[in-house]
Length: 94
Image 1 (cartoon, one colour):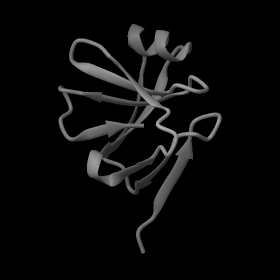
Image 2: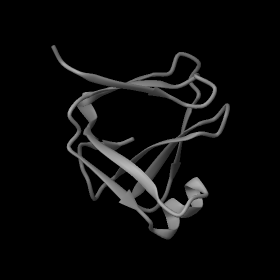
Image 3: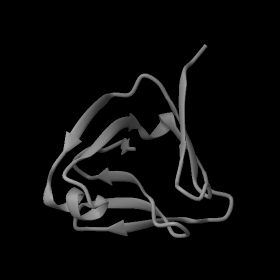
């Protein structure tokens, strides 16, 4: 039986389930992550995009796009949730 991790934004409008184990887990302390999350560092968990199922029935997931990367967030409660980049093709960072 496949293990899955489940999560959501603060208000519960955007849900996700990801197949375990992840590809990797890391802390990022770049200035963009610090500003996006209001914290000294962010812990990201890297998954293959095909291993993450997002449920967004109210279409609350928004994407803020930068030069070569996008950050997914809930447009209702503002929770930062996802990161994807051309640098890591085929991955979704949660």
